Length: 461
Image (cartoon, rainbow, N blue to C red):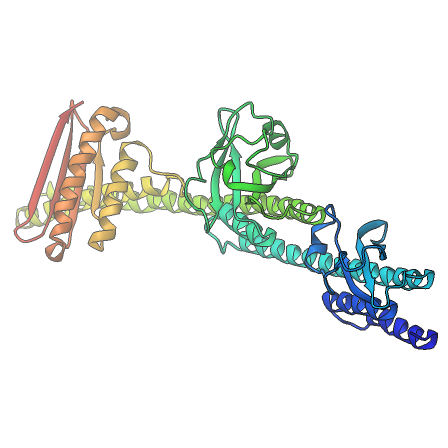
């Protein structure tokens, strides 16, 4: 090729690098230009065995045929910064002549441009990765702090799995025995048997995890530090501490399948930063839920005090007034009416006191004690009946009813309420009474369905 034409073609190849072409197209044109400018029969951009994995996806050009003219190969390294990322290779010339120093110089210019294109592609890819992880972290933080998710740990695991291109997103938390257990997992391709898997106490990896240090594993199946029963399913893995404000919430693990590409340094850095942000969001969300629970509890406590101080006292005073009226001369004509009114007031006072007790239970805790357990059963029946049974307690129920007596009482209550639910079309009122006065506890369940039914159960204390 004549020198002027060759220089023009070389400039065109160089300018292609900055022409806005995608990396693959740019490299293909550089390789084609190398073949054209040197008269090579074959040219390619080859990656060495230890080349970074991101180069393997942008190989370009015609495959080399070293067997064509093995006596006249020409290879020039391609560098991105200080790192060698491949070789620009030529093999064979149509005229059989060896390559000249000028050919080598042309190839070095093109190799430099190839390195520049690869470096630019890496920077662009890193910027896109960073943007994706930052966007993902922001989405998780927003979801947790605005209460748009019911399961915070699963939300973190699912988003991290998608961002990392992992086959599973797993959250582990410390166990009482000193190990770590998988408590939630996002693994759509392999959901069985992951949750509940345990890293046993004494495992070499635990010291790092419990110390809040990240652990990077090349192959989970063969790494001696990995001891869970599901380790054989996975290959490259990241195990990242979920730690914020000095508190270790757990570990975020992002395993890939065996044979998948290992994580890059950039991916490890971005995932570690995501885990730190997610941990902070989890801590803040937990604090937010705590404040909300406290506000609800305080409100319920205020309502309970108002009911006790105002409603119960007024009902009690009204009942006393009616009882005194019964004792007056000439009250015979209204004695029955007044008697029923007094009984209704007593019943109402019992129901209000039961409501006060329910309001005083912590809103997020399961009901405790005999009263709480009975109320849980009546609340379950209420969901099926469409109205709440009237529930009253007499005597020191929580103090005198033991667990041995409570369990059969609850069984009898469930059976009685189940019978009422089966006839719910004809039932408009249900009364549940637990009387723990004297030396026995008595359960009574009444309803107004049809002619009305009454179930009684009794046990000595």
